[in-house]
Amino acid sequence: MLIVCGLALVAPRVHGQSASHSGDPDTEGKHVFRKANCMGCHKWDGSGGGGYGGAALSLRATGLTGEQIIMTVECGRPGTGMPYHQRGAYDDPAKPCYGLNREGAGSQMPPEPATYLRPAEIEAVARYVVDQLKGKGQTTLVDCTAFWGDNSRVCDIYRNARPAG
Image 1 (cartoon, rainbow, N blue to C red):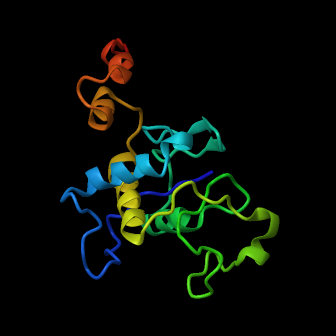
Image 2 (image 1 turned 120 degrees about the horizontal axis):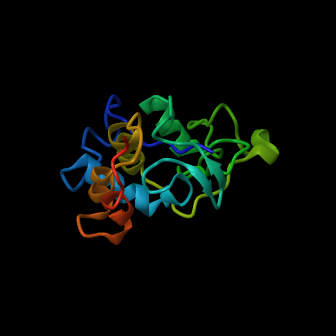
């Protein structure tokens, strides 16, 4: 499974406006990451592993580019549990997903999403993956508090961890 979120190199698609209405692309991307339940499979920190959709890939270790992440969020991943999030994916010949339509995807058709995302939201979540998750290595207390807040008990496992060595 693969969810894609992060695009620092792709220009916004919505009439030149930023994908973030909050003024902070990482805040908007994190909001979409939660809204679309990316963390249901990829975990809150993007480390992947088991989830309702199976063994989701680690977004922290992904080699996908921002453009590839956007395509994955838009179109899902055929033959996996990764849902598509673009309304009309596989229905509109003007917006091809991997060159397939529903008939062509057949039994490999990605699942429908619980939540469809607008193009600006897809870009925001892709940018969040690229900027905040991709290539980040082991999850730290700083990562946890950035996601959950300073007082979250979720982060206690990182507060109480003993330094290696």
